[in-house]
Image 1 (tube, rainbow, N blue to C red):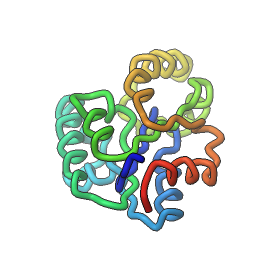
Image 2: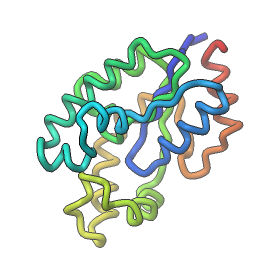
Image 3: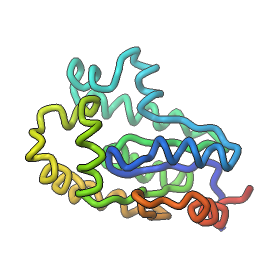
Length: 174
């Protein structure tokens, strides 16, 4: 049995990692950390501002630093950014530090969600609405090799929390 005291939720932007993470943490009686919120506190600015002022390479460096600071966390559900697993050795770190769960969604479902939410997404700010599905499809294909390394892969659109909790409890010792 894999003993884990941390759960890392991974997946494309808009897949519901933060929402599912808060619910899971509540059900498990664990803490919840949103990695993007942690980065915003560390930097004193919003993620879109970090991207526009300091650039993506800087953001990825800070993101990796924030992720590494989670090493000593226990009984914690961590919602990561969509790109977190895809840079440096972040996915290896998460696989060796806790239980990874990929909230998998189709490009069409992601497009429906992201059409409403694109303002706060730095990687989407210059994408025309008519090009959004193509962008999501391409980016998802690029990132899925990391996402599919997760220990558990679930349907992010119809995530059944009780089923997911059962899967998690089989993987961790309470």
